[in-house]
Image 1 (cartoon, rainbow, N blue to C red):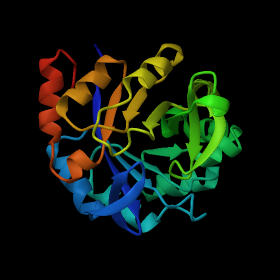
Image 2 (cartoon, rainbow, N blue to C red; image 1 turned 180 degrees about the horizontal axis):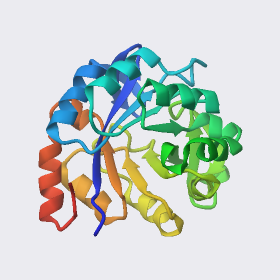
Image 3 (cartoon, rainbow, N blue to C red; image 1 turned 30 degrees about the vertical axis):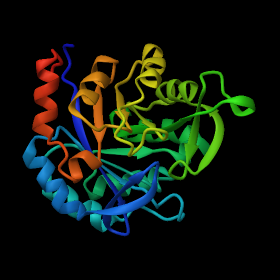
Image 4 (cartoon, one colour; image 1 turned 90 degrees about the vertical axis):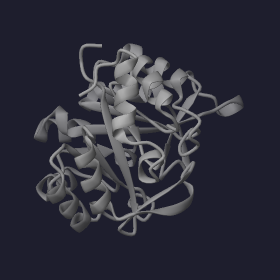
Length: 256
């Protein structure tokens, strides 16, 4: 791999605190977002992702004050998502200090939002977050994966692989592929899903959901992920960013 695979800690924020659960249920407090962001920046994170996980469900905007304070403390790219519904929302987040903006629910409702944001601010700003879960039986999509919204609580019937590819065509600069089945389980990334999405995608692919040990990160990188994102293993000190990078490096994966 010639391009360095990025390691990205993810801050899932609700009520101004970082939270983490399993399959977005049973959330527990993981700390202050500003303090955690500062720690990850110092430990060698390549980027930091900040997701206001309750914003869409509560039909409100991302907490700007927390974003601003976080941006002031880190010197790596900051991606912010949650409750983004318009070009104006993106403008506010960029002015608050975000480098990239994650879009999910609003893009599903109105796909042209991806293009509008990309044309205004550039493709590199747009990260399309795809929360996908496996579906079977009558609800099965062509790929076997369905896009969900509102933290995985609502199914859309949209094929996740097709949506990821379409999002890139509409102008998304990156795809954040989150396995809702694996999220928080620490059983490993969904490598099959990654392998199904990667071939037709011409933009970077971020793997999310399920990281539990260093081998999981390396496996995702070897399966085609351009970046590996994780939350609880970093928040609760199960692993450090350095340990993850060391393992990937030893396996022949290029890291920063």
